[in-house]
Length: 65
Image (cartoon, rainbow, N blue to C red; front, top):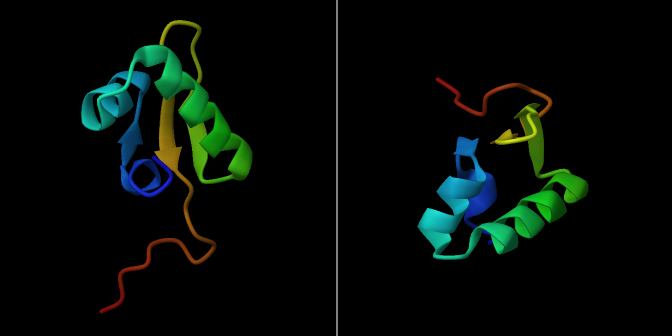
C-alpha cells in the first residue's frame, strides 16, 4: 500500500479498496496513515466521502522539457 497508493492521482476509499483488494475499513486506516506520514493530502473533506491526492513537490511538477 505504501508503494502503490501515493502514486495515484486521485485517492478515495473506494479506489484503494478496488485496486488493492482490501475492505473499506482497512483502506480508511491505510489512507489515514499515509496522511499522517505526509504522503497524501486531503483535498475535499466530507463526512461521507473524502478525496485525497498525492502531495506535490516543492518545485511543482517534476516534468522537465
